[in-house]
Image (cartoon, rainbow, N blue to C red; front, side, top):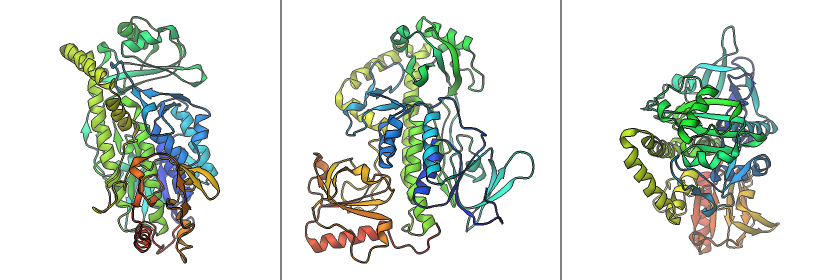
Length: 513
């Protein structure tokens, strides 16, 4: 791997080859930024680990032309559990998206697919390399990388991104605090090749999560009141798992041939900042929480999508002033919402298992089940858990109400035929949609900007009241709306468009790619 004094420096070093680090590397490489990924593991994870991709994550994959790869190997389900103990599930089918489902897919397969894409884009991988320290200055970061025995190698990069999990060395070495709450309860998870599926509904009625995985595996997640305070560091045995199932739901569900057993807790922490100078954090390095609602991996993917184009624009010299700071400004509140929300969801799991609170907790769960039966309530919580409701603050008080919101995946007629909006984002550029049926290119003399933004004249077909009257929309590479206008007067429209393009895709001062 490239080290100081051994040639051209790496522009971005991504530490950690989990889903977050892999998607970030893909985004950087797509934008033409030289990227290296290091991971301390010699081989990729083989355990299933995190289980699913929520609707917004599937939309992100769709934006890069990858959704088909994931759908080919995963299994869709119409919703997901808000908290164990509730009878009703969140209904993703009611959401305004073409990906109105959760995709059941082992994390190992997600990593496999993203690794494949990263290699197609020319990302350089180095496994068995562990970051052990770093120092940054005004022009870059020196990352100390251990390759086993011997003196660590110093890797010089313009930026270093910690995607190295809850115990992130990048976060610690970068001096970024990680406040939060310590573990107070644990649960066990196991994937088994043998299971009696006639017991599935009985197990679910008693709060056990049961999910059918690929390759004939079945996942069980169990919270046993008698084992609730066992530290997450204590290994899980098949005997313990079987005993807990019997105590909780009256049957061991015929489990056998375990493929993965683990114990996890409710430690909840959020990084004080997602950026300190040239050091950034994403995924579990920035936020950890109880995995209720299956939000962790998905939040990390959305971190990567937000950061990727901003970091690439900064490295390549065309980022507007302060763009990289908006990564923390936009994603830290999302991390706060997720960590706060999962603490509340975890209480819905823990309290019914605690003798002192069992009865009132049961009443609360009954009330919440009644609320989830209301379509508007279910849709509100489903949008929150799936991240389809994520909206970022507008940069101007005069901005259109659409600015910062997720761009709907409209069906469009364009000069070359039929398309969806997300199909026009595969190359990772900004997208200027002219919905007034006029114009087919950026303004004359703007050929350089075409490398950063494409213009498409379109007629929309999907009904979407919020877009009524909108003439033009500038869509960010991550699928959020940068600018929108309802102006009809040609000169005013031209001026607004020029201002928006200058604000988001200015001429490069220096190409460092």
